[in-house]
Image (tube, rainbow, N blue to C red; front, side, top):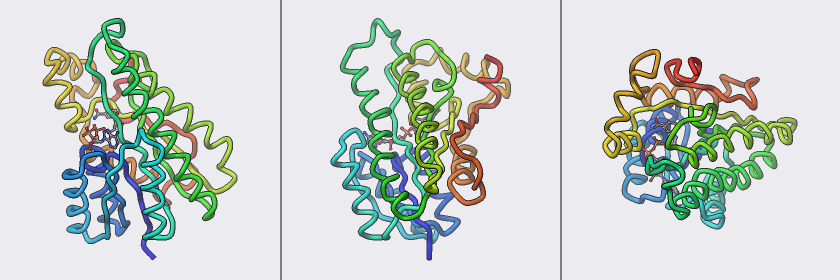
Length: 249
Ligand code: NAD
């Protein structure tokens, strides 16, 4: 019986590339995204890779929509084995005192509440069915402090906290929960951020010991490893994947 993975933010970037890599291993994928067209495109890519897939349009910051993607997955496949809790947005790149409250709320709702709602409904299914594996997407900004990302950084530190505490409560029930902390990785989100803030790109590359940005493929390899049974005793960890960036801070 094929395993089943739910991937939020599956329409783009890290979510899409991970969907493709997991599909190549025969894992069925439920693609969740707020963007219908890109989500459907990922479903087609998964099918081309030989696995089954369907798309659920959902805004992860709305608890009822999160419950909907979980219910639809269970209805179709009976369970959830793997969950890449990944949807997120960056901010405008403004200094914190110049950031308006609406932007603060939006980042917290999507990055922090969206991840909590996802774990709440998905882990419930996993624990009832004997266990499962979750990877939450943190960031370099979730393990160190940086300028112009105060709210984003707060949510990504929050991801680290929820990851560790979930393990304290549910590892005994067969749940594994880990987080990844990627440095700047060449996805559409980062390309847009660097287009809007061009002076940041060169300084970002110069600040990375390997002198380049990461690739979505590299991150997807790590997520697939952590989610699947190749990593059965890694639990509650935060794995940095950043070319050495945070190790030099
Ligand atoms: P991306 O913009 O390429 O993809 C994000 C996807 O999430 C998009 O398809 C978007 O439509 C979807 N999304 C946004 N808001 C949503 C919502 N409310 N509900 C459902 N879907 C929503 O970005 P990415 O770079 O692939 O980022 C994925 C995750 O990785 C994010 O959590 C981001 O913070 C994190 N991250 C990215 C980098 C990087 O450098 N790319 C580094 C560290 C962490």
